[in-house]
Length: 539
Image (cartoon, helix red, strand yellow):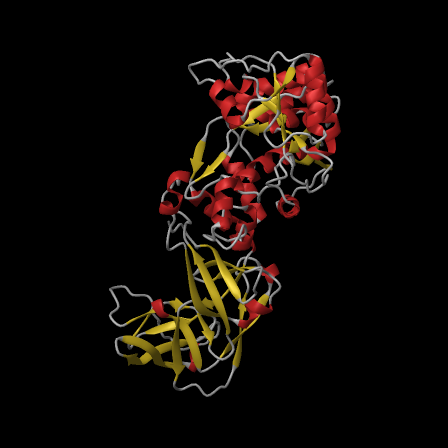
C-alpha cells in the first residue's frame, strides 16, 4: 500500500537530505535485544527503519543490544535475523553492542575522569529509596563525591571481577532533583558474573541500554535514531551521554508511537511467560503475535508490510483492531493463494448409481489468475461433503443439500439426496443419485440445483489435521495482572478433515479452501494445516 502523505519522520528526513545535513546519507539502525522472538510491534520498527533507508538509497545496521547475557541467547540472534530477512529486508552491517565493549568502557572511564560519573556502593534497594518520586526530588548518594582516583580504581577493580553482583555500579553525575527521573544519576554500568554468548568470560561489567545505544549510534554514524515513544523521556539522557562523553558525533533521536494490537500482548516478558509456562507450544505458536508465529499461521510478509503501512507512523499511541491485519492478509492471499477443496467436518455421500470407477475432473487453481494453471480432481462413487452443507430441516431459501433436493458438486455433477442414514440422532451417510449429463462445463440436463458445495473423493482424499484459531485472549486489552484470567480457553480447535490430493502434491504452502477460508501447511508437518484467516471478517 502506498502512503497517501509523508509521515513526520519521512518529512524530517526529506528536510535533512535537501539541506545537505547528511554527508554520510541516511543511515538507520534496528537494535533488538536477543532475549526473545520479534513480534508484530517490532515489524513496524523494521519496516520504518529499513524502509526510509531504502527510499533514500541509504543503509541500515542490524545491531544486537547484547548487554544482558543473563537473558540472551544465540538462538534468539538467529531467529531475529531470519525474521528480518523473511519480512523482505537486509542489512548493510550486522553489529553487536558487544563489538564496542572496550570503547564503551573507555567512554565511561572518561566520564569518571571529567567528574561526570562515579562508582556508587549503594544497594539497588537503597538507590530506589533515594531516587525520589514524581513530586519529590531524590537525595544524593553518600558516594557521589568520591575522588576521581578512587572512582577509577573501583571501576578497574569492578572490571577485574573483584566485586560480586550488585556490590558496585557506575552512575552518571547529573541532578538528583531533576523533574525527569531518568536524569537522577542513572546507572551506566553494573556487575554481572554471567558468561556472555559472544565474549565469554572476558567481561563481568556490562553497560546499560541508555548508555550503550546512544554511543553505538554515534560510532556507527546513524543519521536518525528512530525509537518508540517510551524512550521520549530518555532523550535528555541520550543527549547528555553524547555531549559529556566527548563522542565526536551526535545523532538525533526521534520517537514514534508503538504498535498496539487488540487481543494480544506485546511485551516480550509476557510472551516469554506464555512460552515458559506451557500456555502456548513455543515462540512460533500460531496464536502468538511473534513474526515466527504469524509466519507459521500463514500470514505473509507482504500482508505485514501492508498492515504497517496502513497503521502509519504517528506520535499517538493506539491499539489497532486485529481485523485490520486480517484484512491485509486476505488482500494479499486473494491474489496469490491457490484454490482447493478441503472438507473439515466430513459427511459421507454414496452415489448409488455411480459405475464409472475413478473419473479425473479438472478445475482451475485460481479463476482470476490463469498463470496458476489447473489441477485434476479424482471423482468417485464415495465422497465427503461438509456436514454443514446438509440439513434435515432446511430453513427457507436453503441453498445446500437436503432430503429430496439437488446441489452441484463444484467442477463435478449435480446430485440428489435420496436417503439419509442415521445413527441415533446423528446423520452418518447420505445416499444420493448423480446425473451423468450434468457434468460441469458440459451440462445438458436442464436441472436447477439449490447451490454449489465443495467435496473430496473419499478414497483419494488425504487425511489431515486442521487447526483453527480464535484470539489468544478473550479481552481486547489483556494485562499482566490478569494474564491467565484473560486467556481464551477456546483459542484453538483441532479437526480431522480431508483435502484433495493436489493440495499435498503442490509445492505451495498457502491455499484457499473454497468456501472455508485461507489455510497454510504447517512448517512442522505437511499433513497439518493452520487456518490463517476466514474468507470474510468473522470476529
